[in-house]
Amino acid sequence: MRYDIRLTISHRYAQAAGNGRHALRVLPREIANRQHLTAHLIDIFPPPDNRHDSVDFFGNAVCSVTHSEQHQKMVIRMSARVGVMAPAGHHSGGSGLGQLALDLSRSRDLGPASPLHFLGPAPRLLPNADIARFARDTCDLSAPVTDIICQLGLALHGAMTFDATATDVDTDAAEAFSKRRGVCQDFSHIMIIALQSLGIPSGYVSGFLRTLPPPGGVKLEGVDAMHAWVRAWCGAAQGWVEYDPTNATLVGTDHIVVAFGRDYSDVSPVIGHLRSSGAQVNSQAVDMAVVD
Image 1 (cartoon, rainbow, N blue to C red):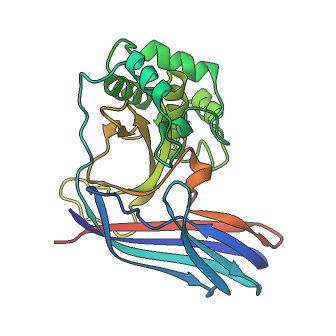
Image 2 (cartoon, rainbow, N blue to C red; image 1 turned 60 degrees about the horizontal axis):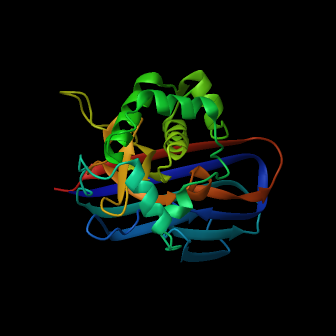
Image 3 (cartoon, one colour; image 1 turned 120 degrees about the vertical axis):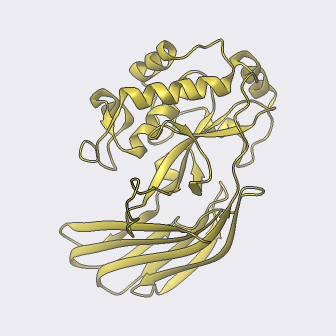
């Protein structure tokens, strides 16, 4: 499967802003035997005074830009062509929690893909007793780890309601869980905390999701969105499995990975600071088209 992806992120400021520094994580990743980036372009308006492209600790592409002069808005446009293959499948009957703990105790790897980075708290991942209790009550802890992940994701999907008005980007997982409402960021943070409470290393994935029109409908440009889901480590034999709790599904070829991290703070599409006053208005539009 091949996709052409276009992303536009706009920031409009009530008062002219200057001295801006931003790090952008918007470019799809290269993933061996799964995802290949054949062409890409990141365009920024106004043109930055300085630009530096690099890779962060977790292997995500980062475009760092600075703007010295004052500007009323900043617009980021990313376009890419990506080839996608299905990720490794879910193998029921694999390792259980006991074997997982043994595998972790033997792990000495501290590289970016090491599960040891994904066991503990992060800026947006604080242990929560209610979420941990939900995980214990809804999962068969004697089942293989891959099955536990699917059980938990399905239960969370059933307990939560997708509601774009209930939370914002700064809402913590505990609040979203208490409301039982939120968006993909909330679903993912809650699931990560729940899995970690069971001793399952888990992290956050940002990316793009192809949304399909209703039967007989016409696909509209800009209706697709940047999305978030979860990756969990199932032991040395299985490795990493990705699950989308917002849609109660294992990740497939409709999901395009942009960045891996511990939580949203590691993979935010735009993070930085500038000097300004007053409010700002942000907007985002994404379009994914299948390349024939």
